[in-house]
Length: 303
Length: 234
Image (cartoon, rainbow over all chains, first blue to last red; front, side):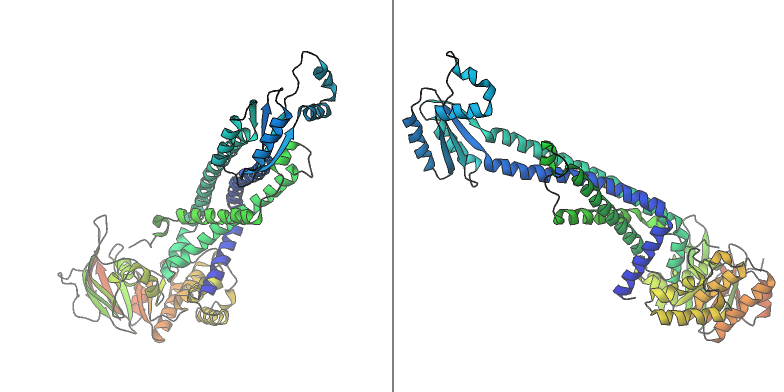
């Protein structure tokens, strides 16, 4: 038997077996689809949050607020000095008047507060954006430098909350991976049980095949291909499910900001291919685990 | 063709299947193995096609020591031996054609070659028109004939049959034995384990008699080849 003939035979036998036991096969496909769908949903969430986080990190600023009495000259001087810094991309000087104008444009109904004679005037500030290549260690150097500037009242650093969010996304990804792995293990177990049942159902036939001269490879491979097909089918179903989830959450369909953040982009083809292949690997693993020697050890009863 | 050299087979239960049996079967012989239930007939056949290994002694088939063959080589030995069991051992979910075509298929013959061989075998057993039927649609005799067609499809040098007529009436049994005789006339060495006294009387074959695992009589030899004392027939 050539490899081509063997592969055609394995595929034919596997498809026949799937058709004969289509109910249990559907159960196996459904189980693996659910586990891959949940894993894929976490991947979709993580992928989009990761992209969003990168985008936010690109826009992240450090805002240095000064005492209200700080002179414009000092601000301009410090701004010029910071622009010379290698890791600084851009510096905007926001004087008291500019701060007031921004406040009025954002909170037009609250301008009375600023006219109150007891109210403290809005502080001037420097808005600093860093280059993409800036790393946390170097940012700390800049932060140390900023804290040493005369008249600095406080420093508002976007990176603090972005860092917390990044940790949260990382935790979410890890939870997703663990959950996905657990569900995948459950799917492998289900496929193993389904194929074990099939093998037990056909154990007499398997004994006959062996007596006629079939090798272990010829006997076992159709079961492996059956598991592989179930896994691949589960992966494809999960991919369609994810596409539906994405269509439901995508920015075109909803205006909710959070939904947009978690489903701005669909998973790339490479991830989808990996998901389907993962299904195939899980299915094959289930089949391999399901065929212990005792199922195949049957020899004819002896006189 | 087949040699047993002081072969003993013990099972895990302690039961002795064969006890120091030595015999030689030449190419082209037709052999009956007879004896009461539990005498060791099936054990003897299973040792020939590698379903069992001898506990002691050697079984040679075509000069190859079956007991020392690695497990992975056993299927290749079996492809040269046609085996028929009491219960036909057909694969129920496959058609008659598919059952008979199983060995040609795993041997990698082309579809045309498979078809030619399968229909030649089915023609020999008179079932060429039942290729599309499933085993459950056939009578017991027909099922057994399909099993024989499957055993003969690759024109094996050795045909083993274990109580092939155990479930059949005398008329069908006679028909089955005709098929084995025809295979023997075409050159195959045929070894049939049977209780059927009519077949043994009717056919001019060598008869080996087993009792409690020992070979106690060989119709072509003056005494049994078992080294133990000859036991009176039960």
